[in-house]
Image (cartoon, rainbow, N blue to C red; front, side, top):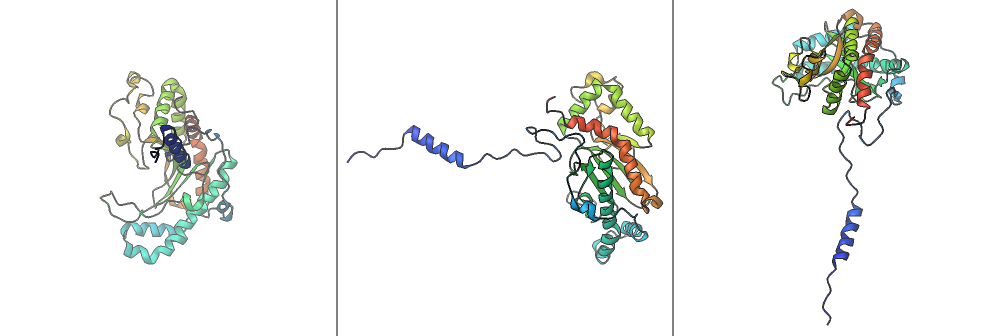
Length: 297
């Protein structure tokens, strides 16, 4: 009998190639809030996607007395036993008006050329806290909040943020915890054109907004979000007019603090949010232009 022949190298290679062709390549993972480097960046003034729920909800009527009172009492009774029988109050008097506000702003802001919006259900943050890594095990947030992102994506860089809390409501926006490449390009642009950024900072403060290094909405000097030294590669600009801004790491955001409860309880709160977004426009467009630059530019 003739000896049994084994497949040659060419046959093995051919079989291996056929196997490889059957398995499509895995697409690269994308960072949240970052566009695909191989695709064209979204246009600077791209309107939010069509979202049916935006038109289905009425304009923001203001938060009711019951809604604010619920949040006050939640501070004192932050436990499941108290919340459970009052969940309907939360849904009707807090969550639903916040969804109306998200829809109201998502209609009005694009009309002004601000590409901010979002589906009402997704734009309003959940009231449940993530306590997995926190020493504070309180199950609920004691405020209601929403965020509207560029093109309708809440996670996209550059957003408007609204928070409602008795005696501590605020409206603001900007770029929270920028991705590393974006933060580097931001710093490079600041040192290349310091006056342009300083003008934006001056305009924000002149509009009555708090502009500081912060990764959250807390007041203060933002020291926790400042580098102790100049960032790597920027040491030579330690005496630059933008030296302090180069040390910001938590983000570039501005807020209108301490909005009175009386305003939150009227449609004027939506007007105030629109005015604040207009004041934030130079900061948002500054950052969006950097987002749209090709990586490595």
